[in-house]
Length: 329
Image: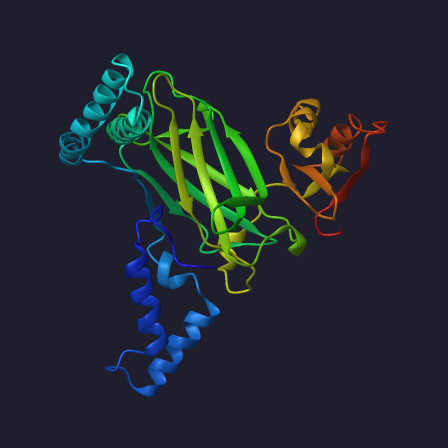
C-alpha cells in the first residue's frame, strides 16, 4: 500500500517523512529501538500513515482563493471570448478560434473553482473514523463517516468500497462492493451532521485484488438538491495477520450467492440487470477468471441465499450460479 493522497488528512510529505524516519531511524534511539521500530513498520505498514484512525475528505476552496481566481482568470476569460466573438462578427476569422478556446478554458476553470467552493460551504469536511486498522482481506473493513446532511429529510447514502489499479493517466476499478444506507440507519450526532455506518466483508480471494500500483478507496455519495454529496477516502486494507482480533468480529452471515457471465457483456449494463433481478443493491463484483465477470451477495442464512439463487437458475446467459459458505469455497 502506498502513502495517502490528498484525499487523506495526512499529506504526502508528512507520510513520506514518517516512512523515512522509520526506515533510516531516529538517531536518538539506541540500535535495539531502531530495529524494533523498523520491524514494526514492516509488519504493520499502515501505521505511519493511518495511525490517527481519522481521515478527512475536503476539497475546500477558501473565499480568498476564489476571489484571486476571478481576479486573475476572469479578465482573461472575458477578454478571450469578447475579442474572439468580435473578430468573428467583423469577419476576421484568423486567430478568433484560438481566442475563443482560451476564453472558454479559463471560464471552465472558474466554474470548477466556484463549484468546489459552493460544495465546501454546503458540506464542510467529511470525516472518516476507522474502526478497523487495518481492514483485512478475508475479514472486515469497518468505519464511521460523519457527513453534513439536510436535517429534516436526510437522503439515502451510497457507500462504495473500491480496489483500483493506478495507471499513468487513468484509474481502473478492479473490484468493488457497495451498499445503500437508508435514513433510518443514520445516526444524528450534531444539529446538521449524521454518522454513516460502513460495514463491508471482503472476500478472501486474492485473484480479485490488484497488488501493484493502486489501493482502496471508500466513496460516500448522495443525491441532494443543488450540489450532491461526493466524498472519497484512501483507506488501509491489507492481507495481514496483525489486525486486532476484536476489530474483526463478524457482523453478518457468510453465505454467498455468486453469478458469473461472459465479460463481453459487462459494458452493456449486465451488472445493473442482474442487480435489479436480485432486488439487492449491496452486490460485490470482480473478475475471477479470464474472460468473465461475476456478482455476489452476502446472506445471513443458507435459506435466504438459496431464495436469491433461485431467481437466476435457468438463465442460460449465465456461466454459473453458486451458493456456498465463505469458509468453504
